[in-house]
Image (cartoon, rainbow, N blue to C red; front, side):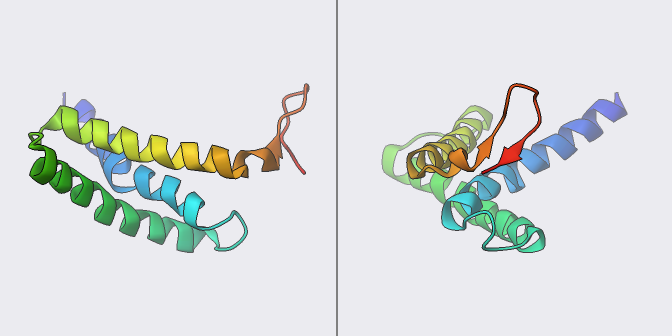
Length: 106
């Protein structure tokens, strides 16, 4: 049972502390503007700032209780909003996948 708890902690930490910031770092900076180390550091910082702020604002303004379901929904919503913005900005058109399955950059 210990291995499952360890995996839960690792994946949960990545989900909460990294993925929302990573998605928003691509909104704020194009692919070549910052390097990988800067993007990773910025991803942690943005996640640490965005997730608690949005959760507390939703609790304060809309009286939504803070629990696992609402925090998960907020994180998925933050990632989804960033992806929608990226789609509208046309940033996903930089990578094309041809018929043979290998990625090509345009």
